[in-house]
Amino acid sequence: MDFKIPDSGDIVEAAKRIAPYIHRTPVLSSRLINEYLDAEVYFKCENFQRAGAFKMRGATNAILTLSPDEIQHGVATHSSGNHAAALSLAARNIGVKAYIVMPSNSSKVKVDAVQQYGGIITFCQPTVEAREEMLVKVISETQATEIHPYNNVRIIAGQATATKELIEQTERLDVIMAPVGGGGLLSGTALSAAYYSPGTTVIAAEPANADDAWRSFHSGSIQPVSPLHTIADGLRTSLGSITFPIIRQYVNEIITVEESLIIDAMRLIWTRMKIIVEPSSAVPLAAIIKQKSSFKGQRIGIILSGGNVDLDHLPWNNH
Amino acid sequence: MDFKIPDSGDIVEAAKRIAPYIHRTPVLSSRLINEYLDAEVYFKCENFQRAGAFKMRGATNAILTLSPDEIQHGVATHSSGNHAAALSLAARNIGVKAYIVMPSNSSKVKVDAVQQYGGIITFCQPTVEAREEMLVKVISETQATEIHPYNNVRIIAGQATATKELIEQTERLDVIMAPVGGGGLLSGTALSAAYYSPGTTVIAAEPANADDAWRSFHSGSIQPVSPLHTIADGLRTSLGSITFPIIRQYVNEIITVEESLIIDAMRLIWTRMKIIVEPSSAVPLAAIIKQKSSFKGQRIGIILSGGNVDLDHLPWNNH
Image 1: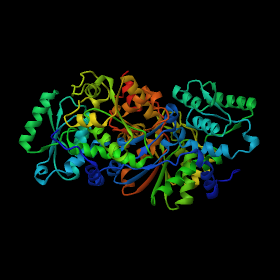
Image 2 (image 1 turned 180 degrees about the vertical axis):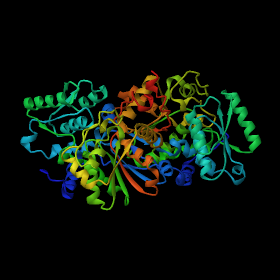
Image 3 (image 1 turned 90 degrees about the vertical axis):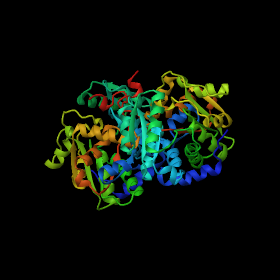
Image 4 (image 1 turned 60 degrees about the vertical axis):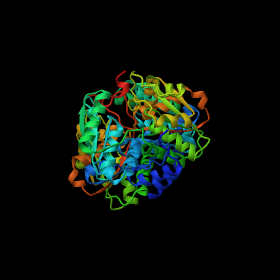
């Protein structure tokens, strides 16, 4: 490993650094969901975070830790999701430019979100190669600094602050759960649990249709993301060279869940809690429902990753 | 008037009485909505209330103030909406039966909500006459006590507790707004504003397609509800003999809003605040958007009345 895993002090510093720019989001619970599960679930509501997702934490921490030289020409990334909007807002908050490479088939909702926060969009063909080529081109032209969405220790330290807060806001938790895509949130979650609540089990949840993290975790080497479709659009990426070893060391278990369970869990949160979460956020609750008996009587914290959904295309209307 | 308008002491007592059975709901605000309106809006989130609406306050207060004789055979009402579910849950909480007369064409979502809370449903033909006839029949058979959804001073005192809390939870408000249907919420809102925040203006908001309250307010006599359609399904009733005089005396203004504005306001709340509100809840925000310049710079409290929506039939998918 040619990187330093964020230690407790790094996460404490990140939390202080980003505090003026983020919300300390509430922790909610639902009597009806608890009765249904025969467990106590504490939902950390990053759907209420600025720019609508936990990504604001990492993006803000990454930008604030760049040197004046690194930041003077702005930041850049390729992303069609929450990282793009969060990086745009985090950059605007400190007065620098954010260059965002997005595939030409990005939904209007996602393009609007980036533009609303002042991100400067360059469109490219919708392939991984085209995205990476275009990002290289944009960076060479602008001299902006690339901020990777998850394979970056500053991003991980920022995402870790959500679980640090959750632990501060709740009594002892038996289990903390997060969804896993590229692993930035999960790495940070696992590190904060290890530092601030040792003894708490960390369980990741992943769509069965994009089970690369499960396969990587069990095979011991990073597996490519499955090409299959999942409605959990935030989780369609594979682990990185930094997130994977942290997850191998600090995460106890990964549970995969089927699409129909994710939709049911998402709808349960919407209906019972009256809050809007995106499909990725519902994956941990789906995992509890799938393995209900093993969670019975437990006190479980869940990071609700975000709330950015396209209200014109809800999953239950497509089925 | 052959009734006594709830005084400040009645509302204070109601608040104490119902406290063990209801949530003290949070007050939320949105930076983006405030920037858009150039005003400060404080949303009292009764969508997070038990049974999903402010109705739980009045129903609980009404049941808890019945004498042992009045309560021994349970309570009854005809309602296809939030009052039916709230009365069922409030009755179950103290161990008495709730008999609910519902039209045979009630949506599955609403029937499920009542059944979930243990309400005993009798279906009837979907006309006002059939509902009232069936309720008389049910009451004669069960000897249950009727709890009217709004034209009842105990209901009004219960609904008033939402605004009492809002005033406690915020700094001085220039304006407090609530939607108006039968006027139970609006009466209670206006009374609490008068008692606990004198000087605050009370403004009601009503769908233009069901503008009976506006017509009653300005003509000085109760006008029948318009037969026209509104998506704000909680507001399709006309004022009652108790709510009307309170509203005439304590409400400053009623603003009517068109359907498209209600849908836009509802979507704005969902998108920006990541919370689920029903169409009726969005009517006050729609009124602010309609008369934006007159609210500029104001500190405005809004009662978000509830969050019970049919996720299979959202208004923006029907247009």
